Image (cartoon, rainbow, N blue to C red; front, side, top):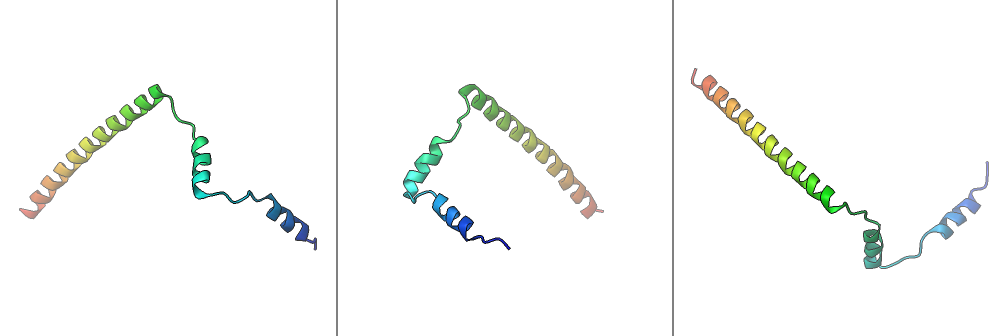
Length: 75
């Protein structure tokens, strides 16, 4: 078997130095790729449109199911 002590030591040396939580947040925040304004507007409009359509479909299904249950109960 190979001796893994050298690789363990290298792994410990490769770790990044400890920084404060806030510094880490600032670093990660800088890595974010923000969408362009026009893409953001289009995606927001798409989400709103799909939400309205799904809400309408759920309302229609709920109404039909309610009428079906009422019909079965009144038999």
